[in-house]
Image (cartoon, rainbow, N blue to C red; front, side, top):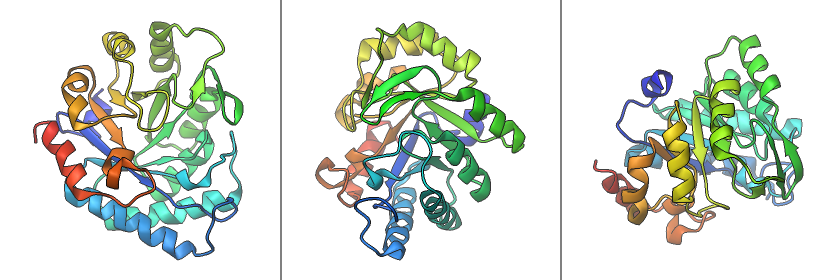
Length: 264
């Protein structure tokens, strides 16, 4: 908890998403990498100016995603994008290499001096649209130690766009992730991008969590009253965009609405 609060001292933490356009090697790449970088930097600057506490950068445009290890061109492209963002903003920046390349995320964070990573499946196993993905916390934590890094790990519990093969014991998973997986924060999401979380599940996780709980999808001003008592922060992507569509430009008015909804 202390490590998280040292990085994010505000009472409630808002982390805005920078969704990278398709990168080289992905089906949607449009051929102009500088356009990708310029848009990413511009969005990061706007989010900081609006008052968010941090930014997380994702290769969101690369769908369909590799399940585990992404190609070298993805790693190098993300490294450049994140390095440029960090050079232009003063708030903490994080990395999420989709779908679940924790090793690359940790490595990019180390190379760019990013502050944290998001790992969608850190422990357990989930059936996803990329097939079965197993958590590799044993590798991720050893890599972080080998790099002599204090990069924070924000990990999903029962991640979106995925299903467990068994009915998960959410309380046990909470303890597994924080005690055995040594995460710095838990991310709780709905079933998909922009979908709200299950309040009863959120209550259970919050009651048993010894680390900060972060809303990972579906945070809106209208839901703030439900989420604020049961979490320490939120990662927001689609709501910050025009009409709430993830591929649209950032809508400053929508960002300001969220800022007001948490009492700032």
